[in-house]
Length: 292
Image (cartoon, rainbow, N blue to C red; front, side, top):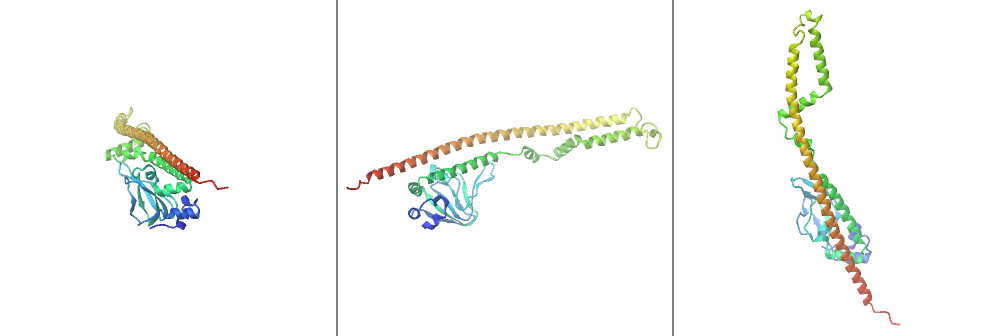
């Protein structure tokens, strides 16, 4: 169903047009209404139009390789989306879902040509907004590869590993030191004069052979738990190295892809503006000069 000029006047992208120009453009564009929860377009669909949100709320998202949903943007009223596929004639790069009942203006390539013919400077607004969205997407995708190596290893821990981590952490604390200093102090004074003569003393006389054996056994057991915890730390470091590599690789590939996409869109817009400029110049030359 065709829209009207008043509706176009509420959209910032078409606010630069005067009433007559909006009336001409209003005869070309269409209004699309989508119920909440429905899909406006899906990833991989042919991109033959873009949308300007007039009412409601929508969400642009993609699914990562791990199956997680990554939200790229939530357009507000007056924002446009889906323009990348319209400009490069490629498939949709994301899925758009209506969070609420939405009403959007659908603009195809013919409508875009008409808009650029009426207001060539609007191409710069479109290019600026597209570059901003690509920059936000680049930052989002760069952070999406980041994982917490401690959380990754935490999920794989068995009960023995949890106990080993707890013992290793406790054995390296000041509490462990003070407890042992206190025990050794009590043990020694109970086995030397004058407390050695009491009923509670002299159970391990000098040179404290029982104490030496207990300390040796404790050191052996603690060393095993500490080594187990250190092996897990090595695994965490390896996960961290893999994460850093994934982040750097994804960032490099995304930046390269964005440069190529941006250069392609810039070239298409400049070529389109050049054709419009030549068309206007040719139209101006075809007007006969006024008679004397």
